[in-house]
Image (cartoon, rainbow, N blue to C red; front, side):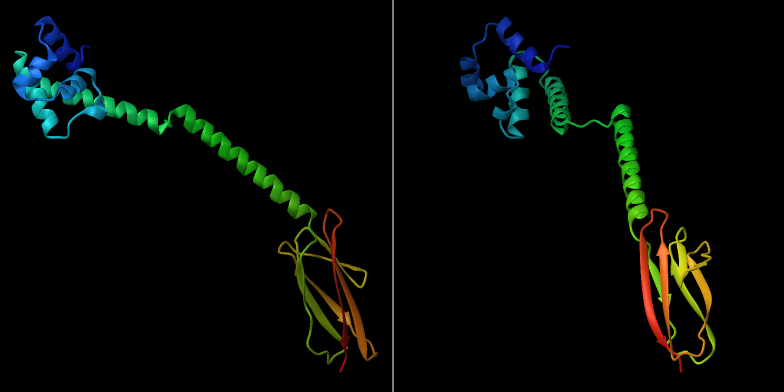
Length: 201
């Protein structure tokens, strides 16, 4: 498709008009006429002078000035959109979107494996609810750990429920104090140990 800038230039050359002569008759600088013919956008005059110049130039060449101006604006807008697309550099095509999705899935999977590795190799958490005072021959010692860990209280294996909670009735005996050792062991063999000596009132 013939662009309006080429149409203006070809019409002028067919009629053997010189830009300098046209410039003098229309009182338009030669540099603006040449910029319009060659689509040198950076050298275009500011609006509304650019539109007025194109219309007057087209009329002088015997063309429909208003029509040529409309076509010129159309061509100029297409050129601006083309440049904007090139500058953006990114186009969200289905292939690009699919690649992004695959990348997110891979990153998520790596993050999951890393977190599971850290979780598997760290010592288990262990929180004991130590009693403040012991006034009876026995008391319930409770606490919480990781659900997949095993608990031993003074070497006795204790059941851990699905929430990680555990409980054991401790016999105090007749001594004035009792030492309690609680050990939590993870499937990887890492352990967390808490010890405390409690006084019996």
